[in-house]
Length: 301
Ligand SMILES: [Zn+2]
Image (tube, rainbow, N blue to C red; front, side, top):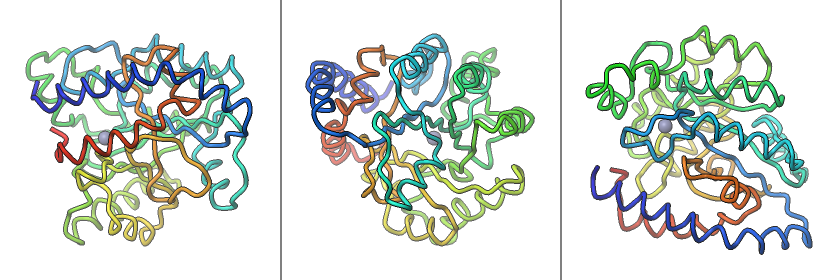
C-alpha cells in the first residue's frame, strides 16, 4: 500500500470517529429547523472482499442490507436522480430526510448483492457506467492488480454485463448514467479527449441502453486532482447532461451547482451509527477537511 493511500485511509478513519459525536447535535438541529438537503450516497463494490487498494470502499452485502433497512425503518425519502434533478430545476423544496443512492464503476456485484435489496424496498438508484469497461470482461487497473495475485477473484470484481443492465433497467428502479469512457482524470484533458470522455460516452451509452443518459459522475471526482473543472462543466452542459456528481463530501441544497453535486462516500466502516450521522449532516463539515487534505496531497495515489 502506498503512503498516500495509507494516509488517506487514516484521514477518513479520523473523520469517521469525529463525525459520531456530532450526530446528536445535528439530529437536534434537524428537529428544530427544517433540513431539506439531499444526501447523495456513493457506493462502489458491494462485496465482502477485503483485498485490493480500494478495499476501504467495499461495503459488504450484509452491511448494505442494514443501510437500506435503516432508511426504510426511519422514514427516509429515497429519491431518484430524476426527482432530485426536478427539484433543482424547478427550485421546489426537497422533502426532509431526502437520500439518493448511486453506485460508481458499474460492478456486477451491485447486480448480485444490492439490486435484490433495492427491489425489496422499492428504492430507486443510479449506476454510473464506464463505456470501455462495461460488458466487456475488462477490469479496472486496480482490479487487474488484484486478480493477478488472485485469479479466482475475477467474478467478484468484474463489471456488469449488458444483460444484467437490461434486467435492472426494465425493473424501472435502476437508472444508468455515464462515468466517462475510460475512467481517466478528465479535468485536464485536451478538448478533443474531453469531448470523447463526456460526449462520446453519453452517445455510446444511449445507443446501448436505448434510453436518454442525463447524468454524469466524474471519475475520481476531486477538483484538486484535476477531475472537475469549469471546463468540464461547460462540456457537460454542451453534451446534454443535466447533472453531474463529484466525490466532494457534503449534502446538496437547491442552490448547488448542477455540475458539481456533492456526495457522501460509503465504505466498509459505515456502521449504523456512522451511517445515520452521514445522513443527517454530521459529515458535511468533512468537505472542508477533505479539500485541505487534497491541497496537500494533490494526487489520488
Ligand atoms: Zn470510478
